[in-house]
Length: 638
Image 1: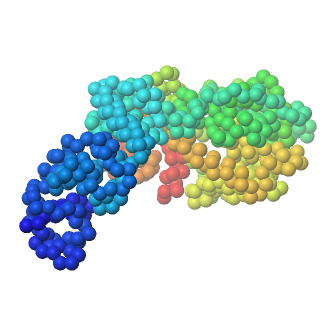
Image 2: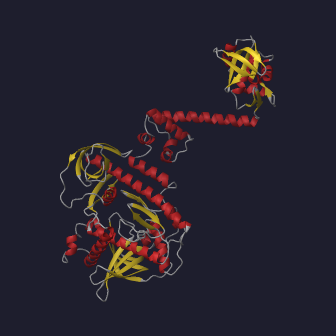
């Protein structure tokens, strides 16, 4: 019985011919299966060995064939496998021809297929390059296994240590280091960040989070390059008549804003809101501007920050006490009651900063009662009392527009970090000094938004409708604040959109063409880039605050704690801004205090597990409750 070797489904098969008719054959496979085979697919006809024995025997024989020698023996042009088998073995048998065929098909580097059973030898240079690539791949696979084995044994290979953060953020998935880390993670059943942390790639869990963030957003590092010194304003500025003072936390070093109160000859008051004016000395497109444009904002986190501007640029413009500083000032003249604005104007000028007040040191002194008691000893007593009087009036006016009062008795948290230790301090968000600063900034941002709109000059506005905040180049109402328009323009040392708005305002006041015109693509680009960066920076700040909360819980050995319901199953510790989801929490109103058990915390994945214990004692009136952001979240969820 005649046997045939043929191709079927991309592979070689052998069988016995049962019948043959024209261009097809009826073949019985070694398995007993019968099939119809086209004659064009038949590569070899033979009588022996048996069809069932050919391929296994040929496979064994092919393993002894030297591919390089076979390649050297092959004709330089296209050839058939039987011809090469005859050249290699002499007069070849079916077994030998099949063995050569298997070796040819299994050596794509040396032989290129040109048809069924036909090949052409690859050029020498092609073979050399392919073999070199194959050797590199083999060496890479060996390195992957070597590095993975080392990591499973507790040793961190230097190449992986050098790229640890990048491997977690933007890895080259074809690199040896990534493949080794992936392999080691599989072998150890640990996530890559946890494995690297255990191997000492990061000096602490804090460093892990920080390095991942900086690798993603500050690929060239957080340090500033060498830059030319900051330039003073190119114009002569008048000196403000009033003495100004700032109100910030003690940790604030970029002082953007200050306030002043001046009594006019007719006895009425003139309130000044003074904003640092770096736009006077940072030209658009210059090296400092390029860095600020790239960073878009200062990054804040407990214990440290990554500034938008280099320190050498910040210092001449920061409103530090003891000297004259260039400022963009908004002045509002008040009526005889000190509660209504009868005139407003803005100008750039030099302002003398008399003092940098720190509210964390003064909140217990500058209370509502002290502001009402004219005999109470407080710094800048006349000015602060006038500002408080105006703050109450402006706040009431905005509340009428909002249609509801702003929540009071909100709590806020300040983190004080010393090395790897943290102290979390609660403070009232609605303390008088906080409310004064917030109200004056709302006033300035609203008034300057109006100024730009009245002169058809575009700016970067923030609006809010139905709880949704967005940015645009034209004015829209901010429902949450209760103002007709609102810009961000009071933090130009810390936010690029504020610097952008300041440039627009200063140009308008000087009677010059604004840097950005209507429908300016660059202005839209700034908004888009800022939105993305601001969201990412805010998320990172939240993550780091959560990290320090977990560190605080561990340091306190806190197991049972009081929490406050934020919304649905979301709660927050009363004494720290640590948010938790409680699956077993019953339906409770936002602000309700409960007791919980903290079961576990993890500083790497920033997780915390807790369970509901029961209701806590209702706090006294005026005790800290929800934060302003939490209250807004609960409000719009209703």
